[in-house]
Every structure is written in structure tokens, then in C-alpha cells.
Image 1 (cartoon, helix red, strand yellow):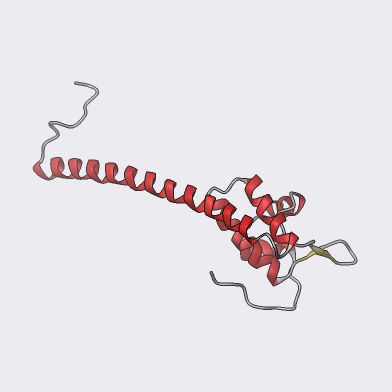
Image 2: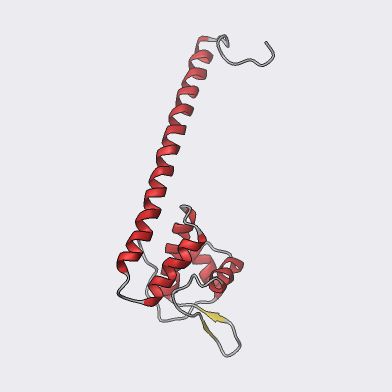
Length: 140
């Protein structure tokens, strides 16, 4: 997975929202729920300042959530990472269980796609022959 450019310059919440595709509201939620690996730094005026590491972590979180990882599992993963070295087997177990769920979803979607492809073929054949006979007709 590609990472963001390395920058020592802190990023505003708006910049992080733009780079991750998360809304400002979602970023605040992630922080409040303990989904970030480290504490978000603040300016003297209380504005959030993020690092490139924060952005990289959030990009991983986005993919885990988009692929259906439950919030509780993402929280657990973040907590394990925060704890540091020594729990890699637990992290692997959590990620592998999620990968297995994603694989099952992909398999189910492939089966759905197969049925849809078959039905598209049925309709295409009927239209090519100029006949609608044999297609479902609730008015018949």
C-alpha cells in the first residue's frame, strides 16, 4: 500500500480529511472512539495537528472499514498497535479473521454476479431474436 509523502509539517483536520476521504466529523469520531494509534497533537489554540503517520494509519482504517471490519474489531486492532511490540500474533489473528470474512463476501458476490450475467444473457438473446416469449411477464 502506498503511503503519504513524508512531511515534518503538521496537517490540519481539513487537510487530513482531503487526503483520507473522511469527513471532518468522521475524523473527530475516530479520535473520540480511540481509533488512532497516538494522541492527536493540538496547537496552543486547540486546533488538531496531524502527522503523516496519522494519515497513513487512517488510510488503513478506511480500507478496513470499507471492507466491513466491525468498529469493535478496529478499536481492538488500534489498541493492540498502541500497546507496541509483543502482540503481533493477536493482530495477525484479528486481520486474518477479517480477511476470511472479506473472502466469503467476495465469493458470495461472485455467485451473485454469475446469476446476473446469466440473466443478462437471457434478455440479450431474446432481444436479439426480437421476441419476449419466455421472459417473466407479470401481466400475462
